[in-house]
Image (tube, rainbow, N blue to C red):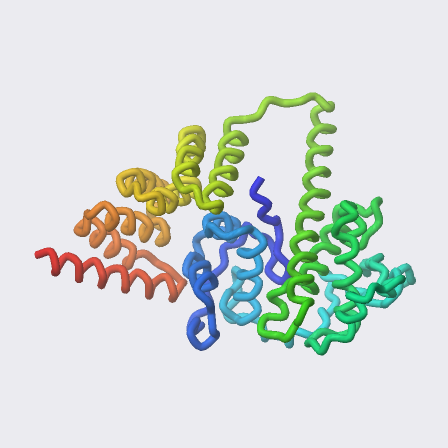
Length: 368
């Protein structure tokens, strides 16, 4: 499967449709190329899950970029008029009704506290500390002692192949506790939380631990969902539905495309679209066809996506890109003009539409 999480710490459900904060300046904020690319796909009309899937980036990287954009005030949640104030990276999370306190005591964490508090079982005392760990603890980096010890303690657990140990919870933890533990840990050890900080050797350790933690949570929750599904049907295997088969093909196609084999991915995208022509499948297939140098195929996919989502600005821009690649500049101009007339709360995307239209008109004038 794709591995897109149901929720992201500090943002919430990935089924939400996020908006770009009005007046946000990517240049002043020092937004990088990949961050800008993903930011331009957030238009207030597309679910965050689809944006992550269609980005072409690895799940962890795309999620990290979204968290980073949110942290610098670039993104608004539904109903927000302005982004929340940005907290210092080292500030501890404030307990709320939905976010229990994060215990960081140096022991195993088995002390009593208020209900709902997460007690991580990572042993921060680091018994039999290795020379390499001692050197790391002595590093002059922008991490406090507890942060250093948690990363080192979790790094020890990565190779043990026990997802519960890595998440720092009991094997009997219920789904709610697992979810809380994962999102609190993700917030604490995500590399983008320390963007621009001096991390030394902890930078690589943190990335490895974060990725392992995400895999551990997905492994546990996938197993739980499978068990629940089996129990609900009396442990009788059910045939795979066409939609499930198409989703499997689409996920494989994305993996192949990210791996650099655009033509191989095209075959899988084509199969997925034949079975279940969802808009997001068509859009991703369009992008892949353009990358593979197949503009005619890209136009076919983009037209179908545009028919399904006639008011989606991103789909319109993708269709215009396909027309341009196919040499149909007049058609591209018409689509871009139509897209400009559609309502979009993404200033970045609107700016890109203007740039695209100016370039198409420049090419038309050069050809006349």
